[in-house]
Each structure stands twice: as C-alpha cells, then as structure tokens.
Image (cartoon, rainbow, N blue to C red):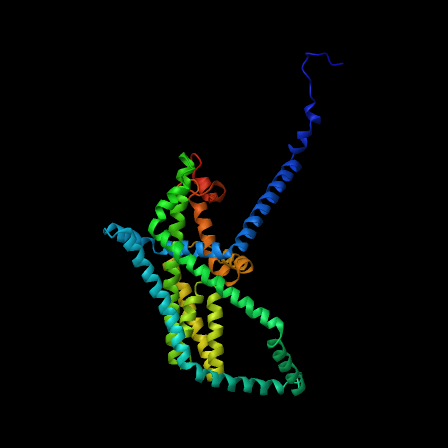
Length: 384
C-alpha cells in the first residue's frame, strides 16, 4: 500500500526503457536511425532531381571556380582588381569551351560527306552479311520495320517527343545562363560567400567547417586540373594514332576522347569503341583492330604512369569506389551524373580526412595500427 509522501519505487528490471538497453534494443535504435538517414537522403536527392535546372549549374560552377581558384589568387596577389580578374577568367573559360565546340563543328562539317558515303556503303555490306545468316530477316520483314519507323516519325508520339526536345533546349539555355551568372559570383566573391555561410559556426565547429571548405576547393581544383591534363594527353596520343591510320573525323574523335576522359574508367572505353566503329565503317576490320590497339596502348600508358603522377594526391579513391560512384551517378543523373559523381565522392572523402584536424581523419576512418606496430610499442619490445 502506497502512503502519500513516500517515494514511489520503480522496478527497473520491468521498466519500459529496459527494452532499449539490451543488445537487441541497440540494434533497433540503430535501425531507426538508419531509416531516418535514408529518408532524409532520399528527400534531398528527390529535391535535387526536381531542381536540376538550378542544382546542376551551381555544382558545375563550383567545380569550375575551384579549378580556376589558383589563377584568381595569383591575379589578386599581383594587384589585379577582383572584377577584372573575374572577367579575364570567364573570358578564358569561354575561349576554351568555344574552341572545343568550333573544332568539333569544323571537322565534322568538312568530313561529313565522305563519312556519310562510307557509312552508307558499310551499312550495305553489313546488311548483305546479315542476309547470309540462317536467322536473318527477309525483305518483307525489313520493309515492315521501315514502314513502322516512318509511321512513328509521322505520329503524334514523335511530335510530343519533339516538343519535349524543345523544352529540354529551353532548360539547357536557362541552365547555361544561370551557370555563367553563378560562376561570375563564385570567381569574384567566392571567399566572402563562404565566410557568410560560416557565420552560424563557432569555435571547433568553425575550424572544422573552414578545413572542409578549403579541402573541397583544393580537391575539386586538383581533380579537374589533373583530369584535364590526363584527358589532353589521351586525346593527343589517340588523335595522332587516328591521323596516322587515316581514320576519318580524327580531330572530332580526339576531342571526344578529351571530353569522355572526365568519366573515369568508362569514358576511355566508350571513346575507344566509337573510334573503332568509325574506323570499321570507313577503313575495314584491320584498321579498326589497329585503332583498338592504339587506344589500349595510350590508356595503359596513361593509367600506369601519367594518372598516378598527376592525380595521386588529389584523388585517393579505390577503383571499386569509383565504379560504385559512377553507377549511382549515372542512375540518378545520367551522363552528367556520372561525370559529377567521382569529384563529389572525392570531396566527401576529403572532408572525412580533415574532420578532426588538418591531417587527422574522423575517428572511424583512421587507419588501425598493424600487429607489428602494436608489438613494437609494448614496454621492453626491441626493434628487429
């Protein structure tokens, strides 16, 4: 019987919170936490996908601003006004991108007639070879397929697709204008913008946010500059090989190799396949095999010598991690997602590496000492 004023005794063994204190309860708590994190991450990804016209230009502008950060610091150190330095950097970016587009357009326009006639002849050879196979379609089936293609091109479905293409072009123009505008402000007022975002942080949290920001800029800049250098060497080597083998569209293919090199592992493979297909259509099987040999040789030299030298310090990611990042990026954002996946992953890993100090990773990411280190640290242990 409980008397008023006496303390209420609670049987702790039967208290409700005891259910969360054992091992199974800890697993349940961790499961709930993981579910919450997954829901938040899914919401963030969904929001980014709904606002790609904004998020993608901002991310690309951040990467390009990080790549040109050393140039901006050098010009400011030389006394160049911030506005003039920004305009010069933007002009350099526009000239580089415009030169790439002009090279592709000029080379394709000059060689398109020859390539079209060679492609038509190659397709006819392929069709003639297919007809010799036991499971080859007959002429009636080919005519039926061609009629279906013509009906699709004149259908309302194709028209809606064309309208969707017009909408995509409009979104691209809008994103391009936003990209240039955001890049201008990142180049001109990047440090001030970052300092404004750090205002809510104090003490150790401010120092950590500062380290993460500096590491992000350094990682993105090093990655883009290193990848550009590697891509240039790949394009130069493969381009020279294509010119020697007299493959049509050698210059556009070399530029395409440069662009696809920004997609690690997969980009080089795709570029090699395209170059081999062009050589196959234009010059035959033997020439295509020689192109494949050139692509493999250049990629091996780049992967074993040049890439570790240029990017060994800027991108310390295992090939397995890169493949997973590429897959996730391609699923979520297509080709552009695959391009951005690796630098974003490198930034996340870089932030983990400076989480607890300039050279101190987060506790869970620190390297464990091996057995010999632990034995040598014991009292009385002697080095052998």
